[in-house]
Length: 493
Image (tube, rainbow, N blue to C red; front, side):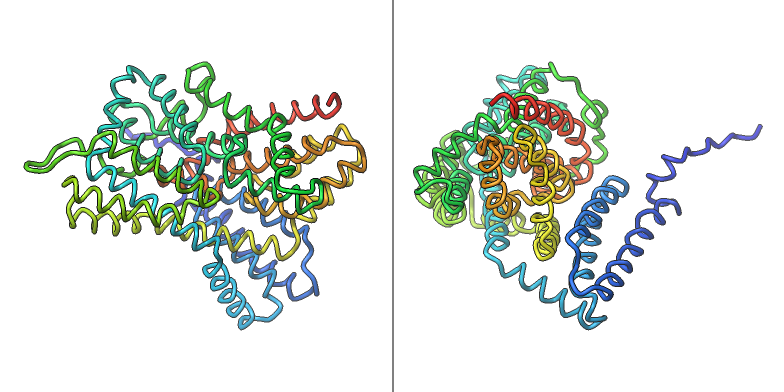
């Protein structure tokens, strides 16, 4: 009797990375668009900002079809470089690419990010190596009788760690993921809560570097006269940052089991999990074990010191990390071999993340060079109906943030246009500012090539593309609720 081979459907063929149709619709489309970008660059003197939309649509298309995030960013960055330098032929492309790579890798922002992530990961590895993480995890385990309580603990941790989003993602992901594994709770749930709450909580608390940035924008724009006025202006935006409130409440409802599980959280895939270092719960013979003080002391020190450095974590880490090393060695809970291992491994495992963010920065620079954000501001500003302006700002910038999270760059460019426009037509300027903040928070939750997605995926041992799909349905639901709120409050406030 012959065995019948079940024929694959079109969608299965399309998503199967080994099929010809998948390769044609990913690599084929990408190479075709690269050629188009070179041709366009050669045929026009100035690249149209509207072409930025083509790149962003491609990013969304390629990321969700291929689920290969690094590949998506590389092709997107190459298209941008082709648009900017394609007119110079092969030599111009090579020189332009070299200039772009060198320029990005020399920027303060990129160096800050490398130092921040590497040192934070070393701090986390030291906490684990000395056994202090286990002391903290043991407290959580005693109070987590089920998945609901574990998710609630993860959700609650946003409040003591609100001051830095990168630290929140990195530390909490590394600490909580082994607990999720031991309690047999899908990692997807913890990863979603961590990524969803990282940016919104920081945009609502007026005590962070984000606060200083926003206050400075209000001062630079001339909306207020001094930093104190800028701080008050930022506080006025907090009630209108609807996406942030909706995301925090929505993630709480998911943690409590009220919000139904959708997508990857309903059907988790442990086969995709990468190994996360186990919590050190065994005391080696003749070696002391870290306790709760050893766990919390470095974290509290980072909070206090970062305050004195205007909430910049890097100089705080320059102080805390060596002190942590010396203190742990004096305590006898680590040795010199442990230190070397934590430094080398803690830096090495983030190489993939560094490459992702490098290409993300290149893409952001390309969009900045072609004035894409100004182009979007012009689209949103063309609708001069006061009540509609907040919801239009949110929707327009959500579309761009979904494909390429610009966040701070978006606000730097958009504020000088949007705030005067809001005042001129009688729209609420605080709500308009909050709409842009909300769009940025949405991008950090939704965007598949965002640094938040990559960082959360790295810290929780999930593939970046998989983590993006994990957050996608909820981000869209939260954005839909937010749009309705802006539509309603735009006309009544």
